Figure 1: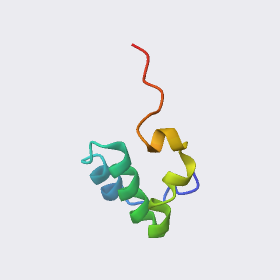
Figure 2 (figure 1 turned 180 degrees about the vertical axis):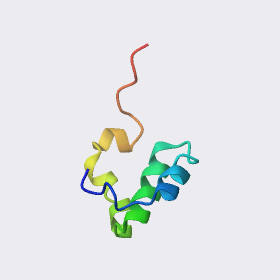
Figure 3 (figure 1 turned 30 degrees about the horizontal axis):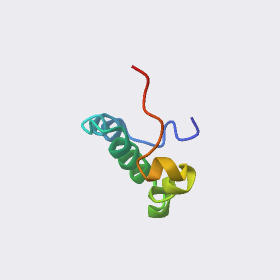
Figure 4 (figure 1 turned 120 degrees about the horizontal axis):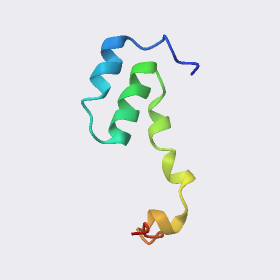
Length: 60
């Protein structure tokens, strides 16, 4: 919660217009001043099988 208070209420409220969680996350990070490189680091955190679309399927 280090960013609490650094983001205006209007920006926070506008972020909820984005239904997709990743789009909302990017919007908030841009508003907080994160560098554009932070948007491309996700691929380095995912397993190769997930990146290839062959990850485990959700349980039903």
